[in-house]
Picture 1: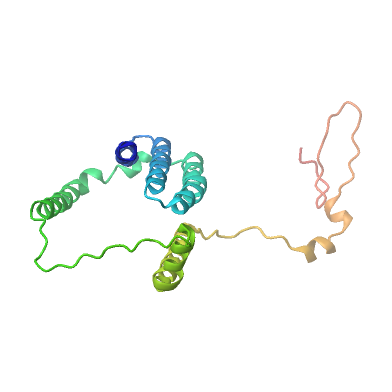
Picture 2: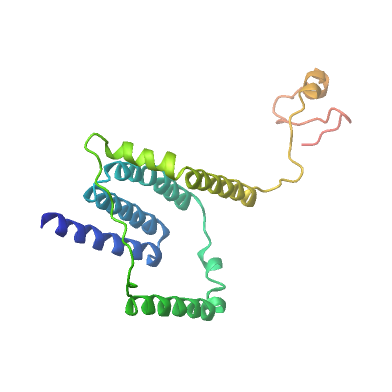
Length: 213
């Protein structure tokens, strides 16, 4: 009974946090709600007996990804007015697509039925000598090895694409020329100026010998 109550509490907080992520006006608050959603999802993993997945979710997503999102949002000067410029223009299309999706979900829920003669796959009990982490590793690196490598490849492509999209080509950057610096003479960089008492500082051009200041 306690486990059921904890499940519904964590699930409710998770759903509310997920909704607040997309409805909060402040982007920093959205990231904080995202962290709260990750923590509640980890709690649900613990209730399901997948403590390794819960630990990975907290360490990787909460400790790295979500904190990185928070730093990026706080450091970047995001122009939200520019982001909302096309909202009214694309609002009818977005509402139409959302309505279609809601109708499809509703039809799926209303007409949910099981065909006769359907076979259900029941999960086999985990052997006592096999831990949760070992069972998960056995599934990922044996039965689902191709899918695991495909996900890693997709993440690599996404990372490269983000770098390409955000990289700016700087025109005419100033570069250091070590050879020119070594060949430079003292008379090209140093000018001896005699300042008369009470006349103030004056700068003299090395090429023309005229006072320029």
